Length: 328
Image (cartoon, rainbow, N blue to C red):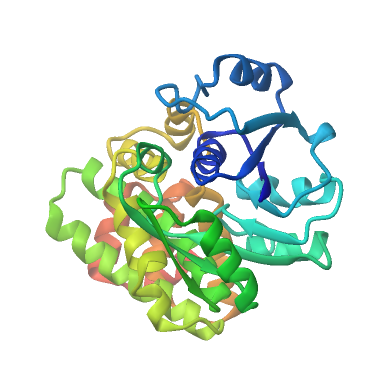
C-alpha cells in the first residue's frame, strides 16, 4: 500500500517504521523541513527515536508536498492539531486511520468526528491499544484494535498493521475505542501523581479501578460497549500508560506529585501530554451526559491549580459534597 503518516514525532515515526517493515511504501509528513531533511540523510529521528534506523522505504515530505496517490492515511499528530491538519491535507484520502489519542478540548468531540467533519467522504476509524512508541519500534510484542464502521475498512487496516510483534484485532465500536484511548491518559496522570506522592501500589490500584469504572460509565452512556473497556484498547492501554516511565502522561503526573508546577512539569517533559487537554474535554462530556466522574474531576482540579495533589487525594477518600465543585 501507499501510506501517508501525518506527524513526524515519536508516534508517527514509530508507525512509519512499523508499516515500512510490513512492506508498505510510506511517506512521513512533518512541518519542519530541516528536521525532515536530517531524518532522510541519517535515517534516524535523532530527537525522538535516535536508536532506530528508519527503513529506506520511508520517504519524507512537508505538508505542502504530500503525495496525492494514497491508499491509506494515518493521523499521528497531537489532538490539538488534528483539525488543522485535516483541513490542510491535499489530495484524496479514501481511508483514514486516526492514531491520535485525545478529545477536542472545547467541544469534547472525538478525533474521528473531527477528521470526518473535515475530510468528508473518507472512511475514518481508529487504531488504539497499549502501544508505547519505543516498544513498538523495538519489536516488543503488543496488541491493538482497529475500529471502523465498515468491516472491509477495519480488515484492511488490520492487515496493513499486523506483524509478528503487533497483533491487531478488529471492532465496530469506534466510539468506545476512541474514548478509552483518550480518557486513559487522564488516569495515567493521576497514577503518576500517586507515585510522586509516595503512595503504594494499593493506592494506585484503587485509583485506576475507580477511574476505569468512570471511563466505562461515560462510554456506555455515549453508546460504547463494555467489552471495549475490558480489552486491549481499554484496560490494556490504561495499564501500559499508567505504570510505565515511557509514558509522558505518567511522567507528568509523577512530577506534579513530587511538587512541580504544571508549567515546570510540561517544560521538563518537552512533549505533549494528551491527558491535560483531554481532562477538560472529559469534564464537558461528564456534564453534558450527567455522569458523575469524581476521579477525573480530582485530576482536573489539580491540573487547573485549584487544589494540590495531596488535597485531591483527601477529598477523594472522604468523598465530601465539595467534590461537586470540581466539575464547575
